[in-house]
Amino acid sequence: MIGNLENALAQLEQTLGTFCQFLEEEAMALAGQDAEKLAAMLPRRDETHRMLATHWLRLAKLAGTDNPQGLADLRQRLFGQAPPPQAWLRLEELVHASDRLNKVNGRLMEEQMRRTQVALQILQHSVTSRGVYDAGGRLTDFLNQNRRIDSA
Image (cartoon, rainbow, N blue to C red; front, side, top):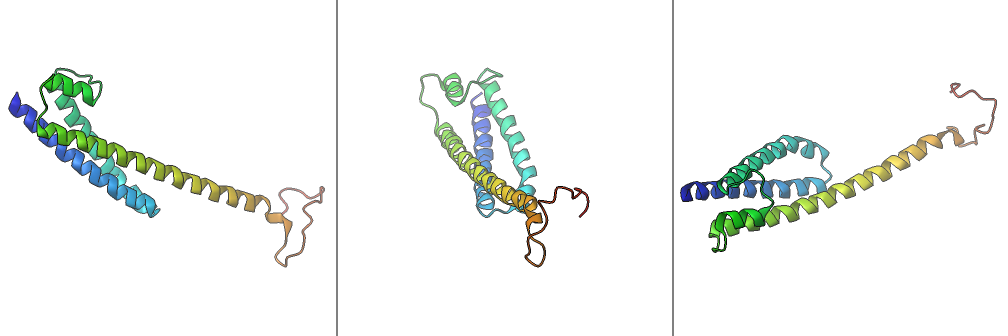
């Protein structure tokens, strides 16, 4: 079992490291508002998530459960009161780092969505107030109630 545990921890650590690198790249794309790069990154995000889920499930099975209740639960199941190995401690550090990076990216996404919503509101306002002036800058007859809506 020890060999299996060491192998499972090593694979999970490697995948979490890859995920942290991905999150850093994603943060750069979000900060740069690079929608094309973000779209191109989606398949890689999905694949990394699948790999993480597979490795976590494998570790959970080694801990004797199919339904772990979090990192502390897995640690307790795997090591009890004994001090965990360095591989586990590195894994915990990567979990916390990925959580922080993911939260930062979430905030960056929220900010991007807010900017997009403001831009849409400005555009929508522009469309609704479009009929106020004509091309020469003169006031149009937007108050003419006899005008048909489709007579543009």
